[in-house]
Image (cartoon, rainbow, N blue to C red; front, side, top):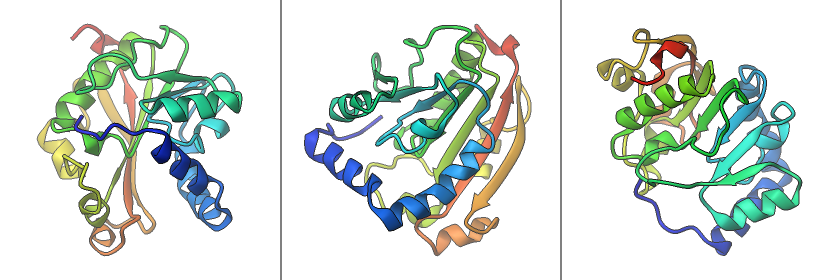
Length: 207
């Protein structure tokens, strides 16, 4: 993952945006899509300002790289873990086996140079922890190009080309674009996104 070192200023801007009335109401439309599919205790990887985390089922866990955001969210009573380990991948090493049933990766995967490798490794780790559902959300074309820290444009074609749709222990149970369930909208609207929901097979563990 090739990211700047986010500090207090970045955290403050994220928290301010979170509390903006109009922005929060619009954001809720996006969050509701994820909440429909998040079952049981959920791990929100890259939980940011915590908008999703605070609405997930009781006992859910956030994982965040920015220590200022971790501190702010903990002060709100949220269970947030500081990212540990290799920053070039996603680690669930601090999550105990058998605790969570869902993992959410919203607007995180596109920040990695080799998103396919990161996602495949995450699927294996999820299965080892007993996680049966994985939800990924990634930006459309305009949204992807809008951020210089984005490294991989993740599309359905990209996932298919890397054998990351159905097969080998994973099964897609839902895929959709929002707003407007049409990929082409992402070439025009910056806040367009793709969501893919996987069901995972525990036999992937150890592969």
